[in-house]
Structure formats: structure tokens, C-alpha cells
Image (cartoon, rainbow, N blue to C red; front, side):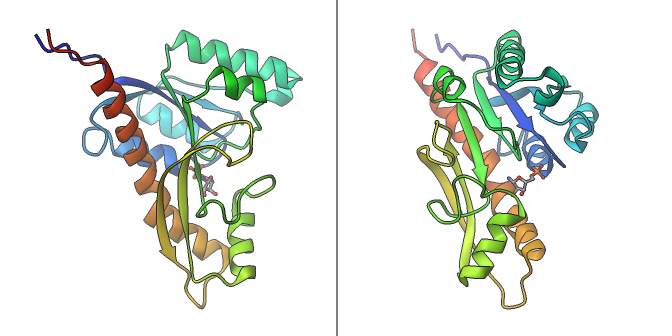
Amino acid sequence: MLNRPEKLRVAVLVSGGGTNLQAILDARGTVIQHAEVVLVVSSQPGAYALERAKKANIPALAISKKELGSQAAFEAALTQALEDAQVELIVLAGFLTILSTDFTRRFAGKIINIHPALIPSFCGKGFYGLRVHEAALERGVKVTGATVHYVNEIPDGGEIILQKAVSVLPDDTPQTLQRRVMEQAEWILLPQAIEQIAESSQAAETNIK
Ligand code: GRF
């Protein structure tokens, strides 16, 4: 008898527009076969990503460190929401709130992030959003891209899962480069990484009796 475990339960953590969340939602049933998005958490109450979750009928909430008043209260509320939804994989998709060492250790091996550069280039503390692409253009690299990696206590320091290269064009601005990296790398890699992890965790659980 082949025991087919349920789909991997995924939470997506967001802070902004949610284009990476949208790429994940759009990949359900095609690239993503062995995982389901069961929760979206935004660190910003007004994030458009929450609208995207609502349109997709995915349970979503905002947990604001500013409103809760401390990192500890923020992480306690986040942990509760993740445990209530029985989340097995946490996906940081444009999520801009720092997570403590305690938090990343509690969920070690269960948190992944999409970084808009080829780690170890243009990563680490302070490298997020447009700043990453400004640095790539300042350095004059001809190729950049995106990286999906596990999250640990070192900013962008966890094990690399997938990477995809994107050419830098002579007339690129930080904005045009960011858009191309999102379209040609981030939105492709994140669904692939989720499916890769879901498949391997299902293979590990599936047993033949
Ligand atoms: C973008 O800078 C993207 O490169 C990074 O997070 C930012 C917003 O992403 N991963 P999203 O549109 O909110 O997914």
C-alpha cells in the first residue's frame, strides 16, 4: 500500500507588493504539485500581497512588529500563527523584517528566502530591494540573478538551494534590472524550490507497505 502523505503545508511571509507570492500561487497545479499554501503573513498591514492572498482565498494576516512593540512579541505572534496552521515550510518572499537567531534556530531547515542576486555577491546586511541592483550596476557586473537559500542567523548566509543568472544590459537602471531579475529568475526559482523541497520531503515520508 503506497501511503501518499498530504501536500507540504507552506506559509509565505511578505512585506510588499507580493509578486513572488503571486508567482507561487500561479504555479500551483503546474510547477507546484506537492505543496499547498496554507497561510500568508505580512509584516506590513497595508501590503498589496495581502490582497493577492485574499483573491486566492488563502488565509492571511498582518503581524506588525511596530504595533506589537517588540521583536519578541512579533516572533511570538508569528510562531503562534505558523503552529496553528501546522506549517511545514516558511517561504520569505520579499519579507523585510529581521528574524532573530532564536527564531531561525527554532525553524532550522524549514525557512527559505529569495535573494535578488547571485549569493555571495551583493548580499548580507543592508542588501535588499533596489539597493542590491544599485550595487550590481555600480560594480559593473555583466551577469547577476537570484538565489533561493535556506535561512539561518547570518543574513543571506544559509545553504544555497537554487540560482539563476540574468544578463545586465548596458542601459539598465536599478529598476529595469530589478524587474528583469524578478521576471526571469525570482518568479521561476521560488516555485521550483518549493516543489523540490516538497517532493523530497514527500519521498522521505512515503513508504510502501
Ligand atoms: C523585490 O526586491 C524582490 O527582489 C525581493 O523582494 C522585493 C519585493 O518582492 N525578493 P515582492 O514583489 O513583494 O515579492
